[in-house]
Length: 113
Image (cartoon, rainbow, N blue to C red; front, side, top):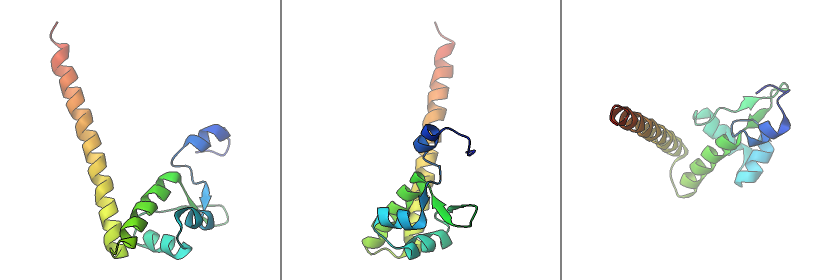
């Protein structure tokens, strides 16, 4: 999102990288090391500021929070990251399936009348 985008649009954007690593760790109740570890496991890829600092979006924080929940319950971090990735893929596949079913239903119903 360009810098000249209105502030209200950026605040409403789940993908806008608004949080520094320190703030993200604080919000999640974890350490910057945890965020680096899930980044290395390719669960999330934070954007970088012009100065090279990691920046996280609200969407990424939700993903990180789910991974932290699994780790807190004893799941190794690599497995937790894989689980979260698979959960995210399943949710996306279900969303697409619902859209296809809705489109098919609408197409079959549009010829009658």
